[in-house]
Image (cartoon, rainbow, N blue to C red):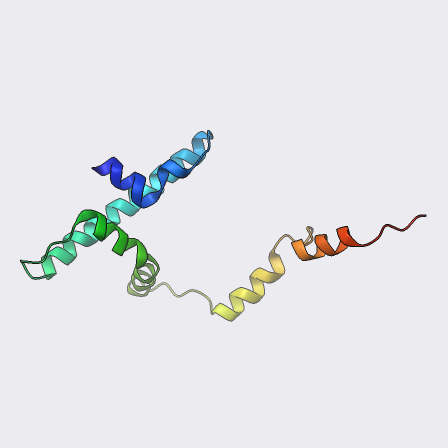
Length: 117
């Protein structure tokens, strides 16, 4: 059941790589997510009415769909304050591989007629 959940919920069977470090990172990320999901399920089960049932696969899908919100709430609880979004967008847009042209620039250059010297 555990491996089935890892396979279906984290799509571990869809990665085609033979690089050991990539496989290890994917496994660790999936296992960490699974542990957090199960701990949160225990907390929800404690707080919910006794007659409520949380099927594991449905819970996994629910957890995955709310993961971003969970991270945001956890960050607030821990006092993490990310920089303002606009500032981050401006900074990141200036840093992205400045020595490498973006796809639109490469396409425009590639489609221009060649001039003869």
